[in-house]
Structures are given as structure tokens and as C-alpha cells.
Length: 114
Figure 1 (cartoon, helix red, strand yellow):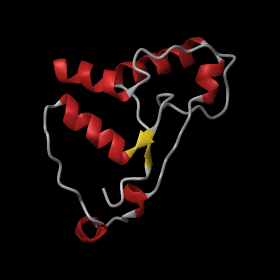
Figure 2 (cartoon, one colour; figure 1 turned 45 degrees about the horizontal axis):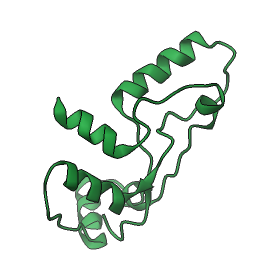
Figure 3 (cartoon, one colour; figure 1 turned 60 degrees about the horizontal axis):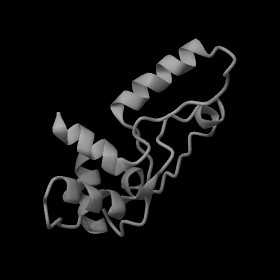
Figure 4 (cartoon, one colour; figure 1 turned 180 degrees about the horizontal axis):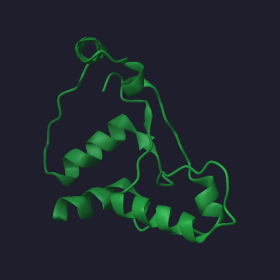
């Protein structure tokens, strides 16, 4: 989307549920906790990986103008799509939480198998 350099933070659904369970059983953890995989990547890298896993050789770009038109129709802001979000799960990692899917390729492969 747009230039593709914006960072995307993500988390596999299994790790999300496991992280919630981990937090519920570790009452010593308090304050804000980022629920995101430890390896954010750019939108361009994420889409390239998704196309590879899905065996889709070509992906058409969504230009900034296209995003602005879509955002106008949906009455939202393009910033929600274009702005980088590079979130690291510092609290979870420091507390010893182990991700089953720390890399997006593995997550896409597992999700595409279901």
C-alpha cells in the first residue's frame, strides 16, 4: 500500500490467545502490554511473503490516491493505513513468553494450511 515502507506489527491468532492466557496467569505483570509478534516488517515485505506463500506471483499496488479515495468513501483516514506501526512485545518477551509464530512466513504457512 502506497510506498510499502511503513512497518506493520502483527500477531498470529494462536499467539494472541496464548499471550492473553499468559497475562491472566502472570498477575505480577501490570501496565500496558503490546500484543504483537517480535518481528514487525514492512508492508512491502509482508505482501511479498503473502504472495509467495499463496503462490501468487503478481500483486497490484494500491497507490496513495487509491487509498485516499477509499478512505473518503469509508469516511476514515489514510493515515490508519499508511502510517508505520513498529510494535515490539518488550513486556511479554522480558517475562519469558515464547511465541509459536515469531516470523510472518511461518504464520502465513500455518494459516494457509487450515
